[in-house]
Length: 132
Image (cartoon, rainbow, N blue to C red; front, side):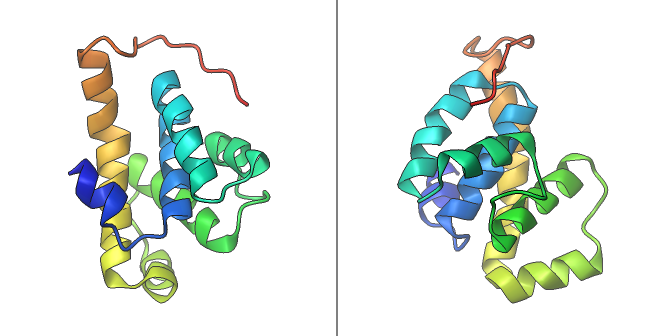
Protein backbone atom coordinates (compact mmCIF):
# COMPACT_ATOMS: atom_id res chain seq x y z
CA UNK A 1 0.00 0.00 0.00
CA UNK A 2 2.85 2.39 0.81
CA UNK A 3 4.37 1.68 -2.59
CA UNK A 4 1.11 2.49 -4.35
CA UNK A 5 0.40 5.65 -2.38
CA UNK A 6 3.94 7.08 -2.29
CA UNK A 7 5.51 6.01 -5.54
CA UNK A 8 2.67 5.25 -7.95
CA UNK A 9 0.14 7.85 -6.85
CA UNK A 10 -1.28 10.31 -9.36
CA UNK A 11 -1.19 12.92 -6.60
CA UNK A 12 1.79 15.30 -6.95
CA UNK A 13 4.54 14.34 -4.49
CA UNK A 14 4.72 17.81 -2.92
CA UNK A 15 0.97 17.71 -2.15
CA UNK A 16 1.26 14.19 -0.72
CA UNK A 17 4.15 15.22 1.53
CA UNK A 18 2.23 18.30 2.75
CA UNK A 19 -0.63 15.99 3.67
CA UNK A 20 1.61 13.44 5.40
CA UNK A 21 3.47 16.12 7.36
CA UNK A 22 0.16 17.57 8.57
CA UNK A 23 -1.29 14.20 9.55
CA UNK A 24 1.93 13.07 11.25
CA UNK A 25 2.29 16.32 13.21
CA UNK A 26 -1.41 16.25 14.17
CA UNK A 27 -0.92 12.77 15.62
CA UNK A 28 2.37 13.75 17.32
CA UNK A 29 4.33 11.19 15.28
CA UNK A 30 7.84 12.58 15.63
CA UNK A 31 9.45 9.69 13.73
CA UNK A 32 7.12 10.11 10.75
CA UNK A 33 7.55 13.89 10.71
CA UNK A 34 11.34 13.55 10.74
CA UNK A 35 11.26 10.99 7.92
CA UNK A 36 8.82 12.93 5.77
CA UNK A 37 10.68 16.21 6.18
CA UNK A 38 13.40 14.59 4.07
CA UNK A 39 10.83 13.43 1.53
CA UNK A 40 9.31 16.92 1.58
CA UNK A 41 12.66 18.48 0.72
CA UNK A 42 13.08 15.96 -2.11
CA UNK A 43 9.60 16.90 -3.38
CA UNK A 44 10.63 20.57 -3.49
CA UNK A 45 9.06 21.87 -0.28
CA UNK A 46 10.79 24.73 1.52
CA UNK A 47 11.33 24.78 5.29
CA UNK A 48 8.56 27.40 5.61
CA UNK A 49 6.16 25.23 3.62
CA UNK A 50 6.92 22.19 5.79
CA UNK A 51 6.35 24.19 8.98
CA UNK A 52 3.06 25.50 7.55
CA UNK A 53 2.02 21.97 6.55
CA UNK A 54 2.76 20.57 10.01
CA UNK A 55 0.69 23.33 11.60
CA UNK A 56 -2.14 23.01 9.05
CA UNK A 57 -1.94 26.69 8.15
CA UNK A 58 -4.36 27.44 5.35
CA UNK A 59 -3.14 31.05 5.07
CA UNK A 60 0.49 30.22 4.46
CA UNK A 61 3.37 29.94 1.97
CA UNK A 62 1.76 26.78 0.58
CA UNK A 63 0.51 26.76 -3.00
CA UNK A 64 -3.26 26.45 -3.63
CA UNK A 65 -3.09 22.74 -4.55
CA UNK A 66 -1.11 22.04 -1.36
CA UNK A 67 -3.68 23.96 0.71
CA UNK A 68 -6.38 21.86 -0.94
CA UNK A 69 -4.51 18.80 0.32
CA UNK A 70 -4.65 20.20 3.86
CA UNK A 71 -8.38 20.88 3.53
CA UNK A 72 -8.97 17.29 2.40
CA UNK A 73 -6.93 16.01 5.36
CA UNK A 74 -8.91 18.06 7.84
CA UNK A 75 -12.30 17.09 6.39
CA UNK A 76 -11.60 13.36 6.14
CA UNK A 77 -9.70 13.13 9.44
CA UNK A 78 -12.51 14.94 11.26
CA UNK A 79 -15.13 12.72 9.54
CA UNK A 80 -16.93 15.73 8.05
CA UNK A 81 -17.13 14.27 4.57
CA UNK A 82 -16.03 16.05 1.44
CA UNK A 83 -18.57 18.59 0.21
CA UNK A 84 -19.37 18.55 -3.51
CA UNK A 85 -17.66 21.92 -3.96
CA UNK A 86 -14.37 20.58 -2.55
CA UNK A 87 -14.64 17.28 -4.47
CA UNK A 88 -15.18 19.21 -7.71
CA UNK A 89 -12.17 21.39 -6.90
CA UNK A 90 -10.12 18.23 -6.29
CA UNK A 91 -11.21 16.79 -9.65
CA UNK A 92 -10.34 20.00 -11.48
CA UNK A 93 -7.00 20.33 -9.71
CA UNK A 94 -5.76 16.73 -9.64
CA UNK A 95 -8.10 14.56 -11.71
CA UNK A 96 -10.15 11.60 -10.54
CA UNK A 97 -7.42 9.07 -9.68
CA UNK A 98 -5.32 11.56 -7.73
CA UNK A 99 -8.41 12.75 -5.84
CA UNK A 100 -9.14 9.16 -4.81
CA UNK A 101 -5.45 8.73 -3.89
CA UNK A 102 -5.71 11.81 -1.65
CA UNK A 103 -8.61 10.29 0.32
CA UNK A 104 -6.77 6.96 0.67
CA UNK A 105 -3.63 8.82 1.78
CA UNK A 106 -5.55 10.40 4.66
CA UNK A 107 -6.88 7.01 5.70
CA UNK A 108 -3.44 5.42 5.53
CA UNK A 109 -1.21 8.12 7.05
CA UNK A 110 -3.92 9.50 9.32
CA UNK A 111 -5.28 6.18 10.55
CA UNK A 112 -3.22 3.11 9.81
CA UNK A 113 0.30 4.50 10.23
CA UNK A 114 -0.28 5.93 13.74
CA UNK A 115 -1.69 2.58 14.91
CA UNK A 116 1.22 0.65 13.42
CA UNK A 117 3.88 2.97 14.86
CA UNK A 118 2.31 2.94 18.31
CA UNK A 119 1.59 -0.79 18.15
CA UNK A 120 5.26 -1.48 17.44
CA UNK A 121 6.21 1.01 20.17
CA UNK A 122 8.06 3.17 17.64
CA UNK A 123 5.92 6.11 18.79
CA UNK A 124 4.30 6.44 22.18
CA UNK A 125 0.81 7.86 22.54
CA UNK A 126 2.25 10.85 24.40
CA UNK A 127 5.09 11.82 22.04
CA UNK A 128 6.26 15.41 22.28
CA UNK A 129 6.55 17.06 18.86
CA UNK A 130 8.30 20.36 18.50
CA UNK A 131 7.65 22.35 15.33
CA UNK A 132 10.50 23.10 12.99
